[in-house]
View 1 (spheres, rainbow, N blue to C red):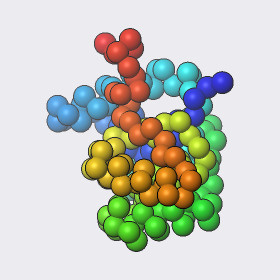
View 2: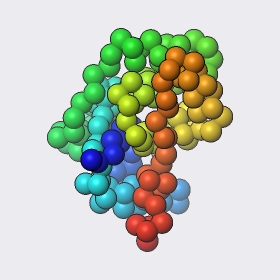
View 3: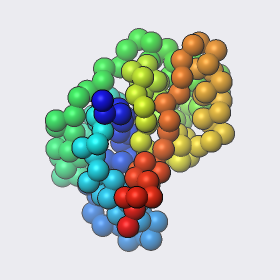
View 4: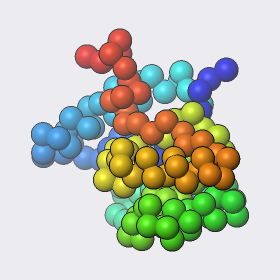
Length: 160
């Protein structure tokens, strides 16, 4: 059985963006492309939130992002996920500016995915924030999926 990976918007953005002019951006793009080549090892999932975010902005770029998502199963935003996201923001665990990020975390949690894949290290793949989220979820009987970047999930054996 394949492990389930929730693909957060930042991963799709790096995958489909024009080549970055910054060293870090270019590195993220190359790593994302390398991970993408391994994607068949996993069951990829996205939420309505990812679909909405990928469809926003420049129409040409949005079309590229949405094309990548075309065949991926869509996780619906349940009332439970909304309640968890609201609680994470309401308790100050996740910043109110990052409410959409709280929703990604909540959806991935509710659906019991194995990994939440993201390049958002400020609000999602942040160890201090993850600690608070994990403590909250534990109190309500849920477990936080493993949150990682494509580089971490790529692993040493696949890295170039």
